[in-house]
Structure formats: C-alpha cells, structure tokens
Length: 109
Image (tube, rainbow, N blue to C red; front, side):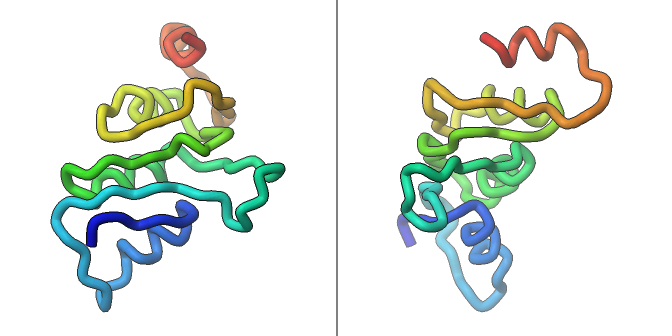
C-alpha cells in the first residue's frame, strides 16, 4: 500500500486494525470527513505524531488541517518533524495548563 487517505480517526483505525497489512513505508493524506471545504479540520497533535510514527519513512500530508490542538510540547513536536507536511496557515489551540513562554513564542513563529 502506497498511501492511506482519510480523516485522522479513519487512518488511526486502519493502522490499529490487525486484519489490515500495511507496508513498512507509506504516505498518509488527511482529508475532511465530509469533503466540505467550509468545515474546519481539527486534529490533535498527539494523533498526528501517532500516525506518523506508524508509517515508517512515509510523509504525513496534513496540509488541509485548519487547527492543531494539544500541549505546547506536542504541537512543537509536530511542527519540528520533517515527515509531517503542514499548511503555512493553521490555528493552534493549546490545552489548559502551564506552558513555557519560549515554547509559545516558537509556536507563534
């Protein structure tokens, strides 16, 4: 299999299904669940990291994602990962809690 396309939840379900055999390296493209361009695609940073960890050397194309949620550390891990392709424009929603000012400044760049 060269590529999986779907929502983050759909991709994770395929990756977690023991009855489906995936290749060692494959790409993933995240899409809107109803192909409605008016609906924002919101994905947890932890889900993006989990998807990418399971796909070997493949690329995770998350260019259509409108918002990433999670802790500052989780969001930074996604932004700094060479195997995850993001749009130039997306919102970030940091979970409640105490975060380092340096992390927040880095995310804002």
